[in-house]
Length: 97
Image (cartoon, rainbow, N blue to C red):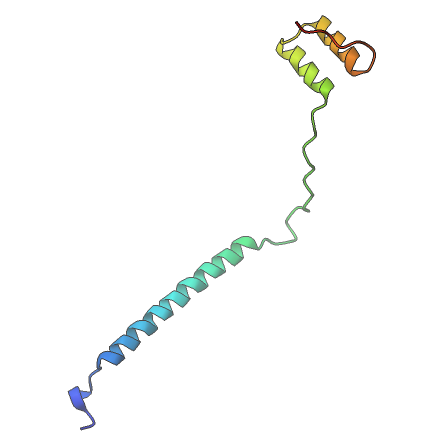
């Protein structure tokens, strides 16, 4: 009576074996992925350059924009001088019409 089915595995044994094998391979894959991510993230500190904070981008001033417009040919040198004088506080704003 003790050795029914000639000592073979029943449904529960096959099911537990399948679940345990899936868990085993899931743990192996998870371990490999975690190891690769950890090694890829960790750099040797002796050969790495010091980390410097990134400066915020400089805002373009009105005079720089005016000089760029002159360089692109959008305005002529007389208009550039007139507008630059206005920006620096030495004249009336030009009337556009």
